[in-house]
Amino acid sequence: MKRGGVAALAVLLTGPAQADERRSGFDYMGPETQLMQTDDMANPGMLAVQAGMRLWQETAGDAERSCESCHGDAEKSMRGVAARYPAYDATAQSAVDVAGRVNLCRTRHQGAEPLPQEDADLLALVSLIGLQSRGLPVMPDPDPQMSQWRSRGADLFDRRMGQLNLSCAQCHDDNAGGHLGSAPIPQAHPTGYPIYRLEWQEMGSLQRRLRGCLSGVRSDPWPYGSDAYVAIEAYLMQRAAGMPMETPAVRP
Image 1 (cartoon, rainbow, N blue to C red):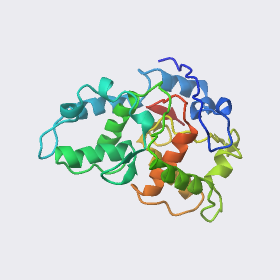
Image 2 (cartoon, one colour):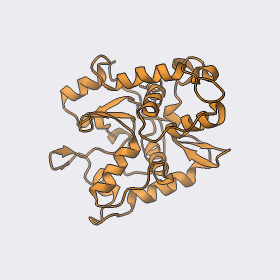
Image 3 (tube, one colour):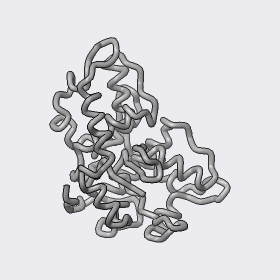
Image 4 (tube, rainbow, N blue to C red):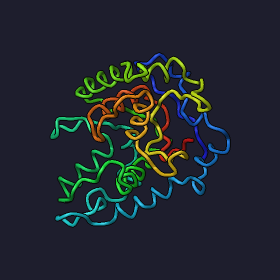
């Protein structure tokens, strides 16, 4: 797949970067790693996508229904879905990310137990869904209920935390393009999750990446599934509005 350019939408950004200054984490990688992402035969994240397709077709739970039973072909029904998440769920009265939506479907419609965060099957299904938005622009959920979630995410992004007393913004806004040791500091646009990270040697969610950042500033990470992670993702996706989705991305 060629990394095509998608024109940035006319959006009001809450971060300091203007639309034509925003850069994906892809742009900070070396050519070998970039090629690994853009070549589907070399991208290890595509193995998760293949596993996700198998799971999409398998029945689960007391209802003995598959994802395909309700949604049909993933390539058609899931096109553009990941680009709109996190989204507000009126029944749960909460914002949910794609993984949260998968688990809501499992409990509500399949009569199945929710999959644990970072479970390989959950990452596989989210990767399959994310792939159907690859190349499409991020288009955040317009539901007014999302405003409070983005506002909370913005507060968390700007809040100093941990023993190092650092905020997300100090790295990813003030020092984006610089280096932390030998690692480049990206602008924190979450356009490729779940990602295959070479450091992990496996797929991982944005929540896993955020937990790593919290540990890096010597702060206690929030539990997996915390609303705080969904709020930050909602804010980051708003900042990334108009940028192309890359799932499954590869990162160092």
